[in-house]
Structure formats: structure tokens, C-alpha cells
Amino acid sequence: MMKRNHLLLMFTVLLTTIMSCKKKDKVDIDLNNSKQPEITGFTPGHGIPGTEVTITGKNFSTNIPDNKLFLGPDQMVVTQATATTLKFKVPYLAVSGKIKVENGNKSATSANSFTVDPLPDGIAEFTPLEGPFGTEVTINGANFPLSPIVSINGIEGMVISSSASQIKFKIPYHTGLTKHRIVVERDGKTFTSAQDFTVTATGKYADWHLLPEPLNTAPANIFTNGASFTYNKKLYWGFTNIGGTDKRVYYYFYDPAAADKGWQVREITGKLPAPISFLSVAVLGNMVYMGNGSPDSEHGKWWSFDPSNDAIQPIATYPKDNAMMGFAFTVGNKCYAAGGLGEKHIYNYDPATNTWTKAVDVPYAQIAAGAAVVLNNDVIIGRALKTLTSSKQESIYKFTANGAGGTLTELPVIPDAGQSSGFKTPSFSLNGKAYFVINKRVWEYDPAVASPWRMVLQENITSTIQHVGVIDGKVYGWTGRGRFFEFRFRN
Image 1 (spheres, rainbow, N blue to C red):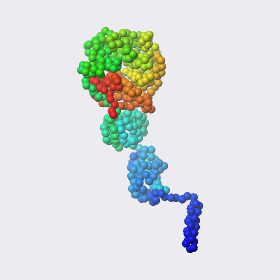
Image 2 (image 1 turned 90 degrees about the horizontal axis):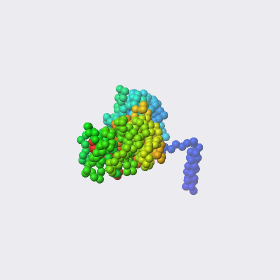
Image 3 (image 1 turned 45 degrees about the vertical axis):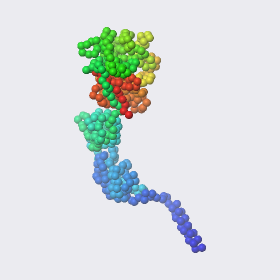
Image 4 (image 1 turned 180 degrees about the vertical axis):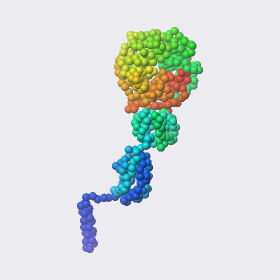
């Protein structure tokens, strides 16, 4: 009986305890079993963004995520933690204020405020701190120069945007692995980062592979500003004089299936003017059409060429002046051509009627030494000057065929607009993408992605590729003297 009374008494006490807890507004349960933290001080007492601050005290957690640290209203990132010290770096745009640490449901606030000093001129910080070539880096600081040059390990990177307090740029190719300082300069200013950027990969996506040099290659540049095209799985090159005092007209052709024969030569003196350069070329069916060449006396003149018998015949004259240094292409079984020096149209040529018909007015001012790459029913055209006062050939357009006509749509500018292409922009299509060769760089345009441009190759060879052709999925490129390469993607 006494035992039962004892149990009843215990139950009554427990019930009373539970009921009294319910009457409280809140029951604090410390799941981390944390002790009350305490801040006794911090050093330094002030500093610019990027300054490392050490907080001293007691009862901090040695597990970094358990310490929630604030400077004024903003949460900081704890970089080191012991039971008596915490460390953090003052971030960009931080404001002055007291330091507060929270651990579980307990907190402590410093007696004094940390003062964020104004940034001096130069680089305060950058993010991220590492990445491969092509990584976009944001630099924060003060009093940056207008139109800055940003480099790492002496290699200039592409600036995406800039202001007096922030620069965004891309880590350039071939910077070398390991750590390098970032340098911002121009207008007599030079700023170097206090930290290093770690380059985790400096490679490239593709290479020009030197092929065995064909027989009959020239000892020096030949066919200066001559034409090139691919026909019936062969590469054609020339259609002008070889150079020097020899005014006879030749062309070379190369058959990869008979590589042992090298470049085979044909003379066609009397069938085309000599010398002539900057011819635009389009292949339609079994015939090749070429024209809009230089000098002035040849502006607008066009010819048909039959590679099977070397027959060359004049065709209708292009309707507009200043047509030299233009481009030509074939899409939808139709031939199109455009002038390069201020001529404001793209025309369609109909072999059946031997007539030219305007297909579309162009929105750009000039496209000298431009190129056209056919992707299905679309043609990627560039690089153009949008206005004659433009400083860069950067505008790119998509021509969409519609019968004998079509439409032009402006595309994102090519990032390499500042690079001069000389008198040629060799180009080709491969696997649904367009490629533009600008000096020793190869830029890829992928219509299927939001940011369509990427550099796939830079300065792999000392020579400059002036001509390209694609045969059975293989991309061949060659220089002005016939030094021969194959473009290959890395695995």
C-alpha cells in the first residue's frame, strides 16, 4: 500500500511540473549544449576590405559552422575557430559595426565597433580565387582606369565589363599553371593584386596538327589574297598569279586520297584576269562561281568555273559597285553574294536565267574580309562594322534563307572583335557549329547555347592559317606557302 502511495506521489509531482511548463511562454532547449560565448576583444580595430580580423574570447565552438558571426548587420565567413579565437576577413562592401557571435541560442556582442576603412586606389579583392582558363573573375576595388587592360602572368585577358570600382574579365589561355598575381593597368595606373589566382587548367580544346608537307609546296607566300574552296572532296587554292613578275594565272588542288601527289598545279592563263585577288567563291552543284575581285577594274565581274575541264566563262555582272572583299555562299540550292566595301545588299544569283536579284538589305556598314558559314538553312555572317565610325569589326548576323530572299538577324558580337584579321577570316562549319579563324585563334559559335561563343584554340602554331576546307569531317588548314595542318579537338 505504501508503495502505491509513493508512485502516486511521484506521478502527481511529474504532472505538476508538466503543467507549470505549459504556462511558460517558451521553453529553451539547447541542443548543442553550448556555453555562453564571450568576446573580450579583437584586432585590428579597423581595416579595409580584405583585412583579416582575429576575435578573442572564450566558449567559441571549435566547429566552424556552429559559430554565426556578424559585423554590423552582415554575416561574416569564419575562416578559423578555436575555443578562444575566431578569424574572418572583412568582405567588400562591409560596413562598420559591432561584432556579434552566436552559438546555439546564446550570443555575445563586442563592446567596441570595428571600423571599415575606405578602400585605397587599386584591387581590394577578387573572386573566385582559382579556376581553369576561361574562368570569369570579378575584381573589386577603387579608381580603376577607363577601359582597363587586365593580365595574369603577362597574358592579357578579355575584359567583359568595367567601372571605376569593379572589373569582370576572363582568365586567358596559356597563362601557365599554379599561382599568378592579377594586374590592372592603363592611363598611367598599374594595380597588382595582393593575392594570387590559381590557374587549375591552362590547356585548350583543339590543336592544329602539322601534316606531312605536300610535295610542290612553295618556298614563300604565293597566291597572295587568292581564293580557296572545297569541291568534290578536293581542296582548291589560287586562281590568280603565283606572285612576283610571273603574271600567269594558276590554281593548285590537293586530294587527301592521293596525298602522295601533293599540291597539283593547273595553269589557266587567259581565262581570268591577272593579277586578281579577294575573289568571293560559291559552289553550286557541279559548278563553281567566283567574282567581286580586285583591282577596281574587276569589281562586279563574275565567272563560272567547271573543275572537270577547267572551263571558265563570264556570267552576269554583279549589280553594285564597291563589291570587292565581300563573301559568297550557297544555301537552299541557291547562290548568294555580297560586297565588302560599303555595298549594302546581299544578292541571289540564278544560273538558269543568269541574273542577280536582291535578296536582302544589310543593316551593317561594311564587312570587308568577312566570312559566311552555312549551318543548315542559316548562314552565320561576320565580322562586320555596324557603322563606319565603329572601332571594331565585331557584329555578327544570321541570314535565314527564304526562297531567293531571306532575313538578317543580329547575333551576339564575337568576343575577339579587337583582333585584326588581316585580309581574310577563314571559316568553316563542323557538327552544327560555325568556326572563325582570326589570326592564330579559333572561335566557335554554337547556336544551341545562350552564350554561343568560346575560344577553342589560341596560338598553337607560329604560322597563320589563311585557308580552310572540310572533307569527310576533317578540317584542313594551310598557310600562304602551303604549310599544311589538320584541326583536331582534344579528347
